[in-house]
Length: 196
Image (cartoon, rainbow, N blue to C red; front, top):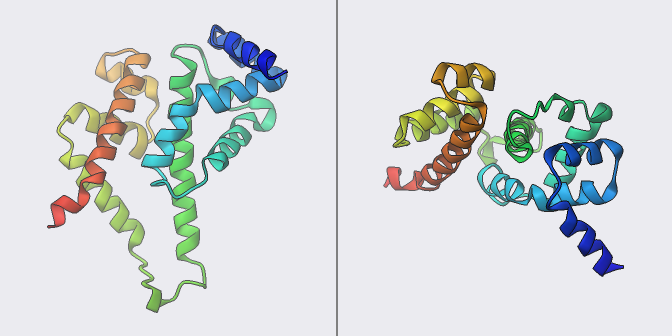
């Protein structure tokens, strides 16, 4: 049985994006498991490290994203228009989703009555986080990466608009965005270097 499951999973490597999406829509458990746990593995690894600083269970990420994408008969996934790779599109959606989720968790935690002044309650923490982010963006050596992150993540502009303005394809924009996020993660890791 395990051998057959591996063979079937191995066959899924040759599936096109259309076949994967149709399998997800059909509720094919093998396609769902393959896509969420194998095909999107690097996306979850990136989010775990760069968004949650390894302070969350990876299985929770998979479950949360699955519920988000599959809710309302896969309404979010139905917006995928095949103009980029499915994994590229999912990575953008996932990063935005989990950044928003993280900020909601932080804000909820800050206003919790369990946090007292003695524990370091800081009502300006959100402003501090934004200032830290802007400082990190300004330290990024690549201005193009900085522009893409600001436009897509901070200004929440439509990728099509940004790509058109930059005179590049959507695929190219998503690739730049992915590299920009990696560069920002490196800059953020070195944040302590700037305070010494």
